[in-house]
Amino acid sequence: MPRTATLLLCLCWAVQTRAQQAASPAQTWDQRYAAEEYLYGKEPVEFLRAQIGRLGRGRALCLAAGEGRNEVFLAQQGFAVVAVDVSARGLEKCQALAKERGVQVQTVKADLRDWDLGKAQYALITDFYYYQPDLFPKIIAALKPGGIFIMQNFSLDQPATNRFGPRDPAYLAKPAEVLAAFAGCRIRYYEDTVVQLDEGMHQGAGAVIRLIAEKPR
Ligand SMILES: C[S@@+](CC[C@H](N)C(=O)[O-])C[C@H]1O[C@@H](n2cnc3c(N)ncnc32)[C@H](O)[C@@H]1O
Image 1 (cartoon, rainbow, N blue to C red):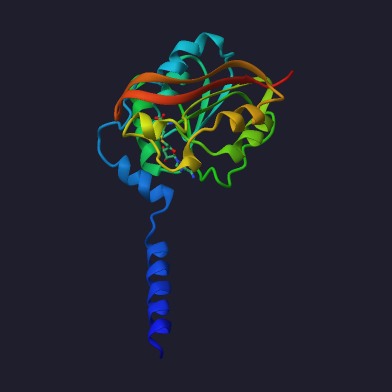
Image 2: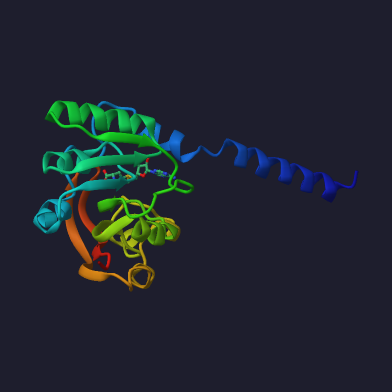
């Protein structure tokens, strides 16, 4: 076999093996959540705490819930919480935190890349630190009329701002994309800013986009 053909074959094999070895999101996050310690702490995102008075009570769907700090807080505030995440270990810790705080949270292990959010079911949908823009139309559809979506995600400025958070632009929130997706909703709050974070491994400046959008009645 000519030398270039052999080299090409080796390259293809190496690329294929590498692709096969790439960990799934479930494996990656189960590993990150393996320790007893809570990666982002046990307290909710400060933005959620600050805005809780503006969120009408009812059924809440929490996307990419992780270890449950925001979900347990919402349950303590009187919401009926459904927490979805791909990590079984994260959801196990979410249940442990709910038990510790004496509240109930329904957990669902699912991959949000192909999970059916349903239609007009929720008073509130939350998304903290999980950016998947093709979810936005599904989120609006899953809200009841007058329902609220609240999110905080790292923006494109985050890699230049601090060491934590995603580096891949695909996982960083883009203002135009976010605002276009919710153009049919009432924007109750929007901020593209840098805040000081104190939540486990997020320590110090964080470039975030914060949104509260209300589905038309
Ligand atoms: C940065 S953590 C944020 C966790 C939580 N929202 C918080 O603020 O503490 C991102 C979460 O997204 C989840 N995740 C990643 N890919 C996912 C997918 N395809 N489907 C569902 N959850 C996913 C991870 O398991 C992890 O819990």
